[in-house]
Structures are given as C-alpha cells and as structure tokens.
Length: 52
Image (cartoon, rainbow, N blue to C red; front, top):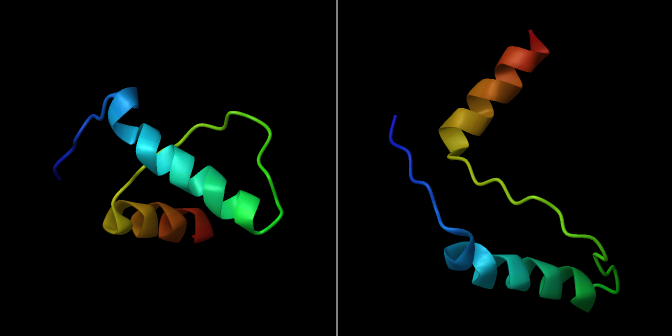
C-alpha cells in the first residue's frame, strides 16, 4: 500500500471546491470539517470489515 501525506495548502483548492459545491446546492457548510482522503480499496476494505 502506498501513502501520500498532503500539506494543508495543497488540499485547499479541493476543500474550497467542495464548499462551493454545497453552496451551489443551497446547503452551505458553515463549519470547518476535516478532509480525509483515502484510496477506494482501503475505504472498501474498512466498510467490509465493519459489516462483519
């Protein structure tokens, strides 16, 4: 498994885009929420483990 640690500044454009997406849906996010990015494979593995 490979990992990449991203600096907060590198993720800011994505974070802003997510906020804009919800604003456009008239569902503004008024809090600073953590942004955790994981690979699909790891996410799927975790979900499967929780279902067992």
